[in-house]
Length: 202
Image (cartoon, rainbow, N blue to C red; front, side, top):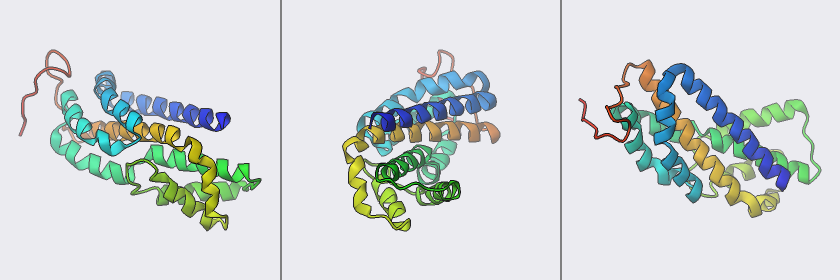
């Protein structure tokens, strides 16, 4: 269990680092204010294991760093359905852990196929606690394994669910800011920083 949890959070840390670098390449110095304002929504998602709980906070936070609300209102709902990188990461780790714990070893081609399968089946996962378990059970069934094997991860599921929820929040926030930059819909940060009063834009 310790290797499972540490391995997952280590991979998640690498993913966060890649997201930060990608955002820095597109947004430049604006990446620091972006990560500063999404810190509270990410912590809320982490503590509740629900990215849905952080959704209103992200809607309020991103305009503070110049992302126009119409971009936020368009990208975030799509991201919550199709850009669930934290959920896919968790489903992959959990499925591999369950199989290895029961002595089931997949070939490289089977592992690649499982990743592609999870890329599809993880779309549309609800941003609520335990939602990923349904996808994991379906994956086990597809490979002809008992779905009851899911019980082995229930003891640490909530701890890992917290991480995947926060990762979904960070990934979708970065996506919204990057799309705003590409579309020329990124306003200047108000004087005084992200916490300064906002002026409505058309």
